[in-house]
Image 1 (cartoon, one colour):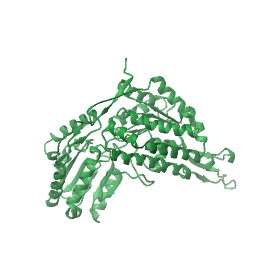
Image 2 (cartoon, rainbow, N blue to C red):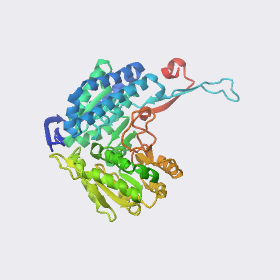
Image 3 (tube, rainbow, N blue to C red):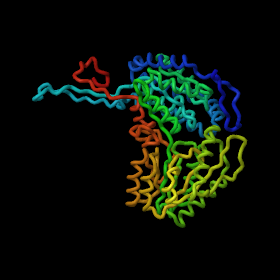
Image 4 (cartoon, helix red, strand yellow):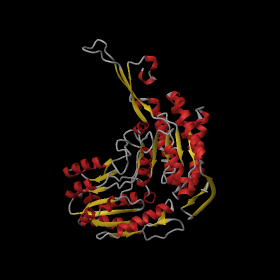
Length: 495
């Protein structure tokens, strides 16, 4: 008999939390999906102003939860309250950002091509095209972002903006956080008198964790899936969705190596300062961010040594920090052993500071040569946690070829001055990453209409999309063309 209750785990205390949470039953999963399908048509029929106001109301309700929400999230994830405060603010901003996009209406890309009945040899039809919502969307909460990529995060906000009802599969690492945010969303839906199937939240954990995910993806009412997590999880869900009698799209953000390249002149000028930025990036949230840099390429020589010395000093003086959970920590340690045991890979530095009582993990920096990097493909795989690998190259002339070997990433960075080599490298990285950063690190994703948070395989399975910014809405839509339609039968945007 599967366990119907489960407990969150405190990374800081290294023990389960006392509050029990009940996983959703198969009947509850079915009910949530059917209600979402029932809500779809009336949700589309509500005005843009109503849908924008709903997103703003959700934002206000989440903000009103105050420090209680942050303290709960910190207890469940081990992330600091200041870090979570920034994430909460980003979540609120994202909801308001999409509210403004909904009001504008241009996200639907309405296009009107008038007909010409007098055209010869055949009349030209009147053609009008726009994006229309797919239907109910399933959103999978992420372990490392309990607010910004979970219950009311970017996937939920963008789906609601597109008039798609949302069914959220909560993450078992932060169930109380998810429930608090879900209540805030539900209150906004009720206050605005939307159909209550517009949003549902399913607790998922214990023996039911995987089953709930499968039940949601396979439910015929669900028309698309948003996922942020591991490569294995994302590809598994995509395969499951493809096995349906009527396959549906899965938009999966998965592992990412996010390489950084430091050109010779930038290294000569700012070796220590760049090392400090890289250190801050690899230790951000204990390295548990999808945009943390896993590889740093340097032209070998005295200036590379200056960089390495400064980075090593910062790492050694740092204290181990909490990881999100034991499963993630085990995976990190296994991956580090695999990489560290490769011939030609050396440990440059490891945190020497005191460890706490929780699931703490030291930061580790490894170092290798370009030849070793080219020899062992495993060095190109993500290591999710507080680490990076320095790759010493004979010259910066080797950078473009090294970049060509790197797998697809969400982001890549170049520290450089102007120069032809940097231009060629930038062109390669534009084919390898969704975002190319100049003279900065890969962490830090701005919520902006111009932002791309996506990338080629294996960082995502849908390289033409983004999970952040206005274009994120388009994942939950498809284009529809109306030919010679009577005006009163057209959507408002095409009249």
